[in-house]
Length: 456
Image (cartoon, rainbow, N blue to C red; front, side, top):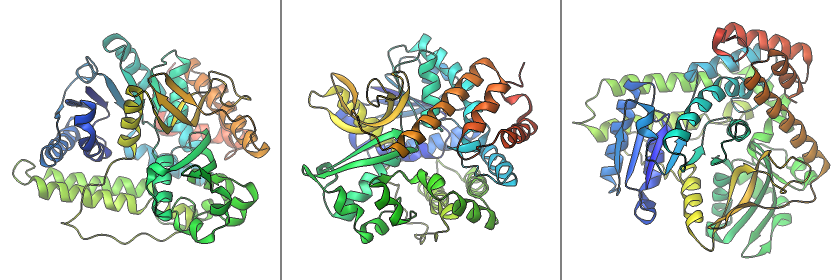
């Protein structure tokens, strides 16, 4: 099996490669090909990836190429992990949102909108090339906002695309750790949209334990993703929320915490990445690969230590000493993708959370809408669970965000500012025509002709 990665200079690529090692022989992975428009960063990340694969006895070759077609042609699976506008695009999105008094997180609200409208045209161009060079390849879209972007690709007719997010799998992993049980003995059933989903059932060895978990303050505090929520809200809804619902459940708290900080997460990540690459550029990665890997892992630790701490008002986690840092297991994004591939090859199949076409999974949505659901993946295909009864408040959120997503996609496809205005005004974290108009003006000032309706 050959895997191509578009956006291969992303810092998570090293961890992704490490995540492939343990299962590469079982799945027959023999080559991973990286491509990125930033050739200098690609060289650094490529060398780190190759070193990790060789050091840890990966059964595959890692190489990086100068043309996207070389990472597409002949591939069995293609990963898309792009950041159009780079780290500074996220900084601009967060800053302009905060100046208007709204949340600018990169996967929802105006931040997610901005990233989507910049990214969708670029991904569609790659998909045209994939259709020509590797029409049978499965495309695993890791690019944020994953659900919205995957919706756009399906609407253009590319149906061998699966949206991947590691939030549900990471949450399940931590739940299993807290319960001190093997992860494979725990079943969690998610429904909703990407970054707007809920767990409605948790079964341990077939026994429903959801009411016990919701009633256990200690459990809710121990799970990182749940600790930011008011437990009374969780009990009132009767559902365990995806961590990104914090921006909806506790919007004013998130906004106050973001206003109070001297550095939003986007700016922190931009600084950490800049310092990390500057250090790596000054090192001989061939002569001192372990030292270079440790410099990289230190930067990654600083990045992850800031995750959702600003918005939630939480404390940063203790740092491990530099020089002894292990490569993270990497079974988040890589694990979901590999589980999906393995499930497709097996008769019995696997249960995992994916962004896929709805079909009749959520009956109040269109069949062609992309949803994030627990799916059974096997040789027979990908079947999302069917959820006939959805609480009214969940249904309202899902319908509104899905309408926002579809209007955003249409705005990009048609190059329409009017549709973009309508989409942004509809989003619950904006919820205002006048504010949406002002935010669009801010985005146009930042990106100039880089937006679909300003290129005409």
